[in-house]
Length: 361
Ligand SMILES: Nc1ncnc2c1ncn2[C@@H]1O[C@H](COP(=O)(O)OP(=O)(O)OP(=O)(O)O)[C@@H](O)[C@H]1O
Ligand SMILES: [Mg+2]
Image 1 (cartoon, rainbow, N blue to C red):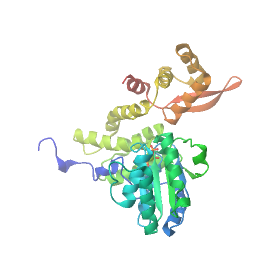
Image 2: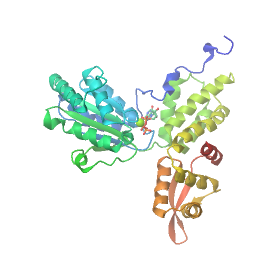
Image 3: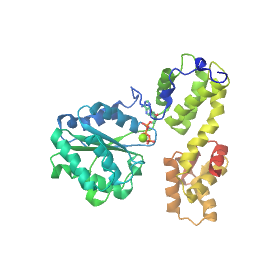
Image 4: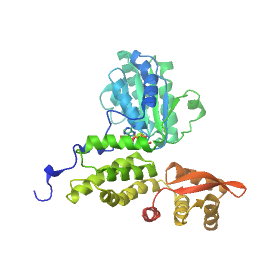
């Protein structure tokens, strides 16, 4: 082979950089793991678990914590892990739970959601086991579906004597209707953003698992930590580790250097931005564009003035947009003093050229 020399790789184990790789040890998440385990522990004795909401910004370990505890519990209770973006209707969710509990696929047609549910409860009662249903990215379920499925599942213990616990991970609050809200009071576990030292130790753990010793220079690693801290997104850091490794291999170097990180940063940021930007409507894009076209410090009043001249928008709506851009981590908002009053300052998180290029697409 001329181009692919497998013997010269810098990677000891490249799979540790896969998006769905689950580390054996989740650093800095002891508190959250312990709390979740305590809430679900009743399932081991076939009593009702405490419903739990895992709440926090993207890439703070919600999915990883959920999967870690589900893995541990799955020897003692039934577990169904639902990726909500892939199963948006109540029927699809119920079909997925059926598959996990009854160990076969539901018939393709002609079976109602109630019949599926009856079979699930029958099996739980026969086996005397509890069921944990874990909804990941819960905010992706349609509102009706969320209400429907929760209501049906939570009514279970009244109609049948079965024990069902709900865990939901979400970055946004989900509005439930009164009927469902009245019976679903989850305990909330918060997942805060990682600070720089935490990011450093988590990325170091991946380097040790993924690269051969000495393959990552200190300078390149520091640069990755710096870039990751700036955008506060561990996924971006893990992506940079891998891509910089591939770049170093491409130029046949035995070490990853700062130049490799710089080379892959722009492309990487674009990919990450493209994803967040695709979730924006045209007003939100316009706001982002104005923010990034102003040089230096930006205060929110200034942005609103420019925006209002272009599109007719109320201040309340503008305020919502700014908050959404912050949630998606495209900007930071800090409060500052200006003259007599307090002003919101907007801090840009990315290089302006990179954001503009991503907005073009
Ligand atoms: N404490 C941690 N230790 C090691 N790796 C972690 C930790 N927290 C997160 N990660 C890694 O960071 C990435 C994102 O984590 P995860 O998917 O669990 O976040 P999330 O909170 O579910 O994000 P989202 O809200 O976007 O779904 C994954 O690759 C995961 O392995
Ligand atoms: Mg997740």
